[in-house]
Image 1 (spheres, rainbow, N blue to C red):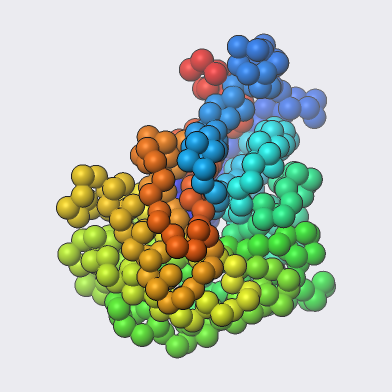
Image 2 (cartoon, rainbow, N blue to C red):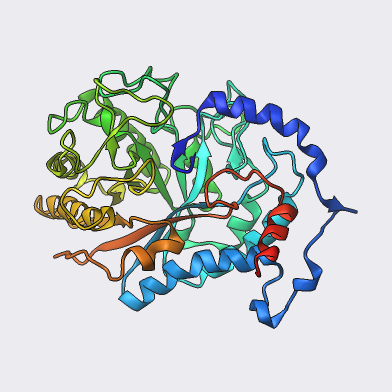
Length: 413
């Protein structure tokens, strides 16, 4: 997960956990009941939404929903989640869950696919605010316990909306590059390698037992293809295949997600603070390498029945975005790049579903993409956007529910 396109590091989580202790005073739960903006409840001028925050978030969600409808296109909400109390200390999980019931009702009334962010075996401290399910301890980290949001997700979502992101293989630290992938089993690993000694289940089996049907598996381009347009790493490919097989054995279908923000860390410029990668369309990373990656991934997974879809690229618009590369804007460049990647997949004879990221968050899609752009001979793709509910739209939730609600109320919601 990330804020403003920046990946969270474990060091950051430790500092956040310490700060959360001092933030406990900010809880606004009185008498055990969530305090809401009562003057706003049911106000027809605000669409009948229960409070200003819910009203604002409805206006973040509906632009993508309505764009899909106007374009006659199918959609995928590849990431979303509201927070619990872990490492925040505001005591507002009941309020956020009340909002969650509203949001999941909106989502369930669409034909979008959707995957929440996230379950994360690497959060050895017991999870964080965006993890609805966690492991029990640092040594027993297979996901096996529900947290606050689980009851809402399980009550409202079904089918291809009963889906989750399995965060772990996309993790990296400073110094990461194509030649420094990190230590497997320490800096990153693929979900499903360990079992909970009490339940006997790995993470995939546990999530399937909770009714989930689809998992999005993020991984890094630099690890799977350490030489641009070169062979896929046999070691990393075997790990990814094993992960996919474990998910399939649990009864889950897999979405493969290249989690690179449209960039690639070369050995000459490794990661520093989540930046420094070269972007698709730059002289160092021409789009032909992106096409080659997906051609090779397709050739390896097109016959795998466990893989239901490919997610071309996670959030190409963040981490500084991509260069215009001779196009009128980065978003037009991305439309061309994504079309070429999809065409590379189809050229292998692969007809699997392709998730095509938009160059936007959910609320920005109509402005950045006036019309759909993909030409697909298999007619089997979905446009993708992500949606978070913090004040700035990122994955951090730095303020209490009441504080955010007051903020949006002061702005007319």
